[in-house]
Length: 493
Image (cartoon, rainbow, N blue to C red; front, top):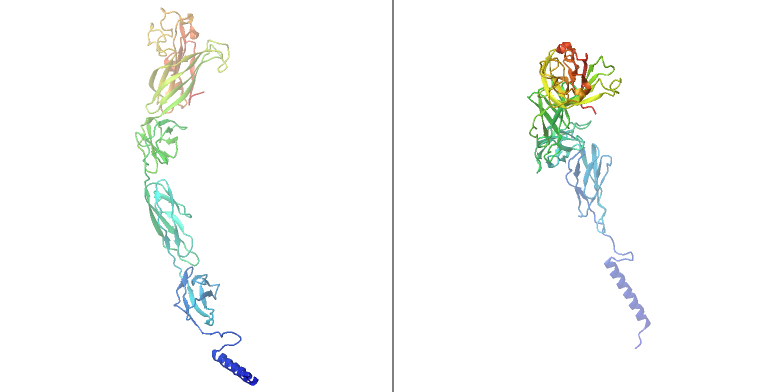
């Protein structure tokens, strides 16, 4: 069956009309789907307080539930974290924070919302310390404190006998055990008032294995560089495991003290150090040691005395020696030296002489005397280990100057020493027990003496001697007599 052409034409028109109707019903177009521009708004929470040099957090929400972002409309006054809402002030004034929500497919951008925070200023400030550090004796620690103003704090120790602190860094150094109290201060500036002082207490603990020092050992005392001073030397000290911080010296009997950080220590006496002994003690961070055993003041001296010999010029009889003086006990020991024989050698004066010199090493006499109100000792040293010098056939004790007759010991039975027999010799010095180096007075010089009964000091059976009439009632056997004596501290090389 044949379908007419007009039938197909009517059918196509109807189909097109139906499609257009359906398109209008669905809202479709050739430009794609339409956007639903739903409105939204932003609301802030309560405005937080904001003080100068502080922070605050603003909150805001969009009615759409979408996240908001923050910005500062007053950047000279404040800044804000765009996501957290944390506001930081810069200066006093009104801080304006804006909240934005730019919308999405379903919501239109929200109108800008703002919140104003008044940046307030409080001139009062406070100081707070961090946690207290631990501190062991002999160590260090650091304290930390901050001021609410942000200004730098200054540290000080209110217990300076226990600890010290660096004012800027807060580095604490202990001096002993106990409570160390550190103070922090802030004096303020043009904007802030001074802060109330804050303190922190640190207990200085005793570390293990540290004790007080042991008593010093090898302590010696000797004369100083002035008549009323001594020098105390410490050979060794058990530190107790902590460095020695100081030494102390005390006298026996008491009344004289001194302190120092190292050995040797110089001790000054009110008038004289004679009659005193001295002990030493050591101190570390734990405490002080027991005192050492008292040390006598013992000093070595050099002596030179000259006897003028008119018959042997330019040679004189000279004694050069050394001795040890104990100022605590007022005693002299170990006087020894050499005595020239002025009748020997060429006519050349000391010290370029060619004289014989006798070695005197036997101190056998020390006699206390008071001369011109000065206490001292007449000390004699001998060539032989005996005081037998002169014969006792004419009286006398056999050696004392000015007694008997200066004929060699053993005369007349013993061989003449000049002919090969044995003869003795001695030299006598004066030691001022208050200060051995004091220059002698004439009365003290007059008590000096020597005798030489050795072969080179003999005139037949007569010994050479040196004395004064003022001192002993007679001049020397060849008119020799004492003219000087010089004592110096230390032993000559």
